[in-house]
Image: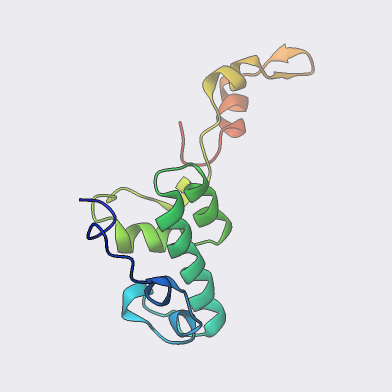
Length: 123
């Protein structure tokens, strides 16, 4: 059943309202990473948690984590299956079709130039 008990019209706003207690303390419900101690840091992680709840599975998630420099720490903390994540994953690989189409002084790039053009960590 979705949405609770049929016919129950009790107000749930209080249970669903995000108050400052969620980011001014280490609220257990938010599972803040170790080392997150300031209100400013907790607020950032609270917002990341909220966007996780709202945008789960959407591309915005990766951008949020990279922009806030939390991709590695939050992935390791919340995704036990992500065992191969490395610092270079905050950049995406440049597609080989783009690399092959890029020229230097009107000529195709050499293998060395192509390797230098690619983001670090990707071959």
